[in-house]
Image (cartoon, rainbow, N blue to C red; front, side):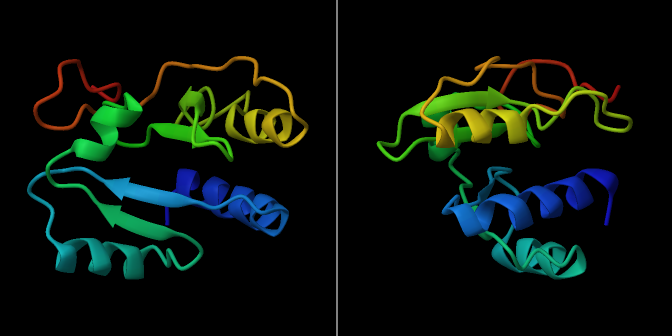
Length: 132
């Protein structure tokens, strides 16, 4: 399990009891159901669901482009935050997801409402891999 997965598990443990539902979306067109299930088992991803999106319909509607990009929808299914979990994949100094969830749960707009995602663009999307 990598550092981001550990940070995500801590966030899920904090916010799931407050009614926040976490759903991961795998939008790589070449990923198969069996590959995704194997990966979820390997990283012990038992606290959220995985949606397979090989035609990339879901991420296009959400405006996402990269792996690891986070989109928060409110109770009315409006996009309230889009971007990265925090400011750095390896050594974060500022968290974005938790404060955005706190703001939304308190009826406020998250600030920032959008951040630059880290990660690599899915096939068919333009951009450079943030890890290159």
